Length: 181
Image (cartoon, rainbow, N blue to C red; front, side, top):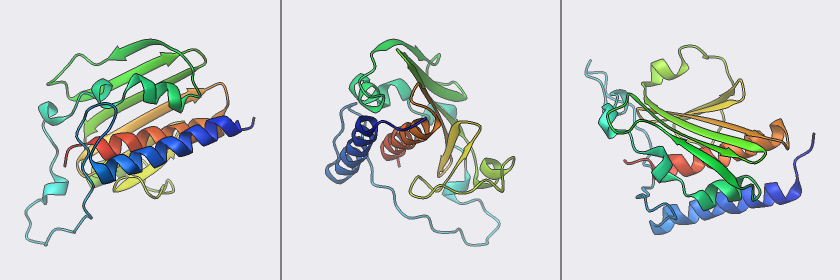
């Protein structure tokens, strides 16, 4: 299977647009965009650092509100959205959104984590650079950690696994950029 040049161009343009949003502070979904600050290891005082503490369920944002319908269709080379499956709402320990499209499916799930928990089951998976504090692919999912939030991105398109990974990376970049500081 090969990646279609139009899909690659669309994903590349979307990543560039997200990078521009980070610099200007705006985005299509209306969520606030914060430029991530570099991680600094905590002093060995025995106290957990802010990056090691998990956010409360109420602090996890609404995934469906973070990503616009236009962004979803752009990521999937213009495929129409057939349905959107949102999570039950604030206070859930896991927040998610899934988009069913004609010839594709995208899903994003957010959950609380720590650096140790994030890599506990997959310590040897190769790291994917440029996304959050840590990231790796496993079983057609892209897992990304930004501070105390785990982002699980699933992409399935008729264009195949190489395209799925490109779409997952672009979608993860949007979510990472829009997570509150």
